[in-house]
Image (cartoon, rainbow, N blue to C red; front, side, top):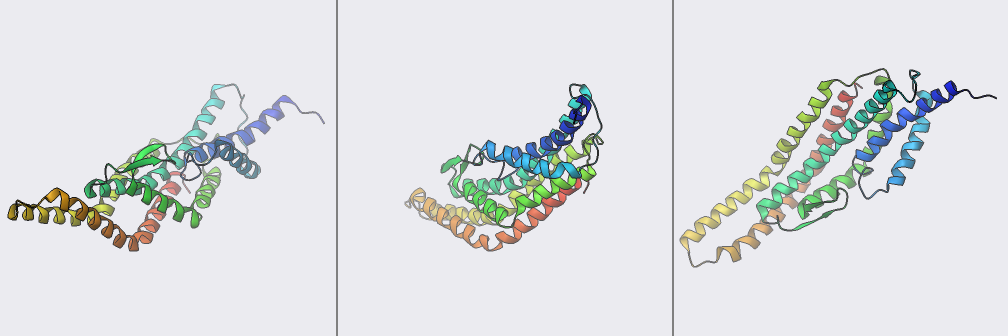
Amino acid sequence: MELTEAQLYVFIQQYFLPFVRIGVMFMVMPVIGSRIVNARVRLVLAVLVSICVAPFIPAIPQVPLLSLQALGFIVQEVLVGVVVGFSFQIFFQMFVLCGQYMAMKMGLGFASMNDPTNGVQTTVVSQFFLMLTTLIFVSVDGHLVLISLIVESFQTLQPGHFYLQPSVFMQIVNLASWMFASALVLALPVLTSLLFVNMAFGVMSRAAPQLNIFAVGFPFTLMCGLLLIWVGLSNFIDIFNNTMVFGFDAVSRMLKL
């Protein structure tokens, strides 16, 4: 059996373009794209998924591999993977930002630790919310749903047959504004309650100037903040569910599913 150069080009394109889209998403998406997961593991997962998906993808236009048109196809696949993975990172970072708001108001802004998933310094409260969100996300197979979305996207955004519209990138910008607003709304009960606690200590300091407000106020504010977070965890599942449903819907709209 003879294998011509044209047949080799077709074979490489049929498997390489799906691998680029899936591999980039694995590098950017939450959980699998974190630094905890070894890059070799992500590479193997991308190869396995690409091998399973490639036979079901419609025929890809045959263009020379070393050409500007082939480069354009690769860039489009990279952008699709980044759009899917980065969009879902925004939903995870909403919980991190909410923890930042609470920690700053509670006086825990100095209690920072290294985030192993992103390699940055975050507050302890943010790390707690991120770990809780990650565990729930994995337990409900959210990562598998995200992989299924990128696999289904090959039917609506066929490699070599589409161009990403500027409206897709505007949706990501709108998601960034949604992240700040939602984090503030989620942290608002704790922020409001601690505001009244601080106002009460202000009145106490005026009524009893000899009272050391810093020695009494800081631990009391910290305990009140932790108690309010504990009470608010009773609604965390509903908040997580609404956020993930909104996130999957947003990604589906971007992929035209």
